[in-house]
Image (cartoon, rainbow, N blue to C red):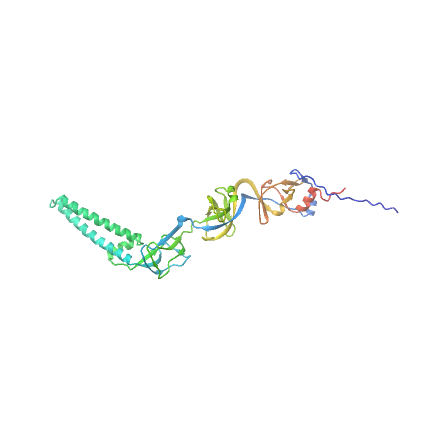
Amino acid sequence: MTRVLRVVLVLVVFHPASADDLVKLGAEQAEHLGIRTVRPTRVDTLPLARAPGRIVVPPQHEFLVSAPQAGLVSKVNVALGTNVRAGQVLAELQSPNWVGLQRDLLDAVTEYELANRQLQRDQTLLDEGIIARMRWQETKSRFDIAQTKLRQAEQVLTMSGMSEQQLRQLEQSRRLSESLELRSPIDGVLLERMAVAGQRVDSLTPLFKVASLKELWLEIDMPQERVHELRIGDKVTLDSPAINARITQVSRNINPNSQSVLVRSVIEGKTSGVLPGQNVTVGISHASTDIIARLPIAALVNQAGKQYMFVRTPRGFEVRRVAVAGVEAREVIVHEGLQPDDEVVVQGTAALKAAWLGIGESE
């Protein structure tokens, strides 16, 4: 018996990739190959870069509490990092100058009261024609000088930390206070504490730094070669905790040590998840009106240095050329080539690619 052998030659054929290519495949064949599709998740921003940054307090929300007079820190009432209220006593300071300033105020009060009584008496005598107007003017001049001295003494004590209520109480009771109370100027958090009980300090020595955390900034160190890609208003995100910010300023100089440019952004919404001084890594993205889609990276097909995706159509699976904006973990961001209603293949792409390129065709 003669046997006839028929040899089947398997050829590998590569067709030029084109956006118009179509892989014709029926529903039953697609199911047999385990092909699965998803619709793109539309996003509003185009990923640009990731960069290191830190959380900072805006300078207008930082306040320094200094020693108004030279003296001895006798007591510290607050710990570092605690919340403080406006007017809360942070520390007490014993100062000989403080006692002297209170004494000067009481002397000015006495002189003012005496000059005021003299002015009232001479005003009555002038109205009755008993004294000349020149004498009244001299009395009025002494009263003005005494009033000026009183206001000056009050202002010095106010600048040293005495409240209006304490000032009036001192003028009425005439009792000197031995301790000078240092108070918080705002509701906030104690960021720095330089004061130590038993410490001798000079006038204007910094003792505390208090800040309001209602507004925080993100300062980002952006590589100089990427700065030209940034725009004011670009979105800045922090994943954990979830924080959003917007770029408000790009520095015009370069850090000579790191060769980076400082980019400043303002955190939007609540800031309870982050703290001043915290180092973070943030993502920067452009706001865009284009159709930007997020998909599993398994949907992406690379061929001859270009990127494609397979899109289901009534006739089969269309090979669609796409433009990739970036890759994040296991997802890819596409900004050209897809529509919101497209069904993109995320499983079975290897089989579709083989069919597209003609791998496995026989003669």
